[in-house]
Every structure is written in structure tokens, then in C-alpha cells.
Length: 152
Image (cartoon, rainbow, N blue to C red; front, side, top):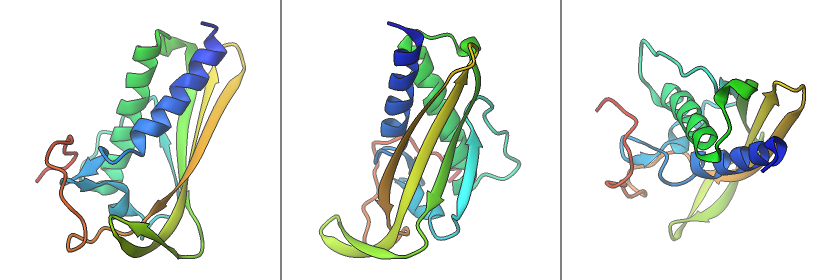
């Protein structure tokens, strides 16, 4: 498979796994913890953070890097052919509501934009926008089977 097509697949698969319900913090969907304070944040996908404190935003950064590197390995590409890669999370300015687990919730549309620059000078990008409601343990179910990206 040509490298360009492989990298496009890496980015598509990365966003799918990164935004999935299995991306958890303390057993709940990770992005519900950060959406209220999120305006725009960028995570380097090639350099996992070494946090001195471990909160949901640090978990989101670490998970992004881990998921991207995992997808590179699955694709058969070498990580050395990627010069730079990042994901940008940005939320909409206006709140909206959407049906989430059988109840209407207020939240925001969050856009996830991933981009990777390759050694041959080309770049590839992928984006997805999903609805994210702020975390509310009264309305959400804890996911006991997913990896837990928290210290508690």
C-alpha cells in the first residue's frame, strides 16, 4: 500500500479510536471531563507527555499519542517517516442539545482535526466533529471494561 494512503488510513483509524466510548477517564467518557474548559488545544502525537499532575486533559494528550502510535504500528508504516503529527480539539461557541443515552443533554460540538507531515514533504489530514456533553455521573454509566486513564 502506498505511504500516503496508509497514512490517511492511520489518521482515520486514529480519530475513530480516540473519540470512541472506550476513551475513558475514571471509567467515564474522557471528553466529557474536558469540554467545559476546552476552547482549543493541540496535542503532539509523536511525543507523549510526562505529566507532573494527572488530570483529564493530560489523559487526553497521553491517549492521543498512544492511539496514534498504535495505529502507525498497525499500518506497517515506520514512525520515522512521520516528521510531525498533532491533533487539535476545538469546541463550538454555542451550546446545543442532543440525545445522549436516552436523555437530552446540553453540550458542544467538538471538532477533532489530525494532521501528519511525512518525510517526503506531504501532509495528510482528517477531521471529525462529535457532540460532547459535560460529564455528569448522575446521568452516565461507568464503563468498567474500558482502560482507565486516571490515577484513582
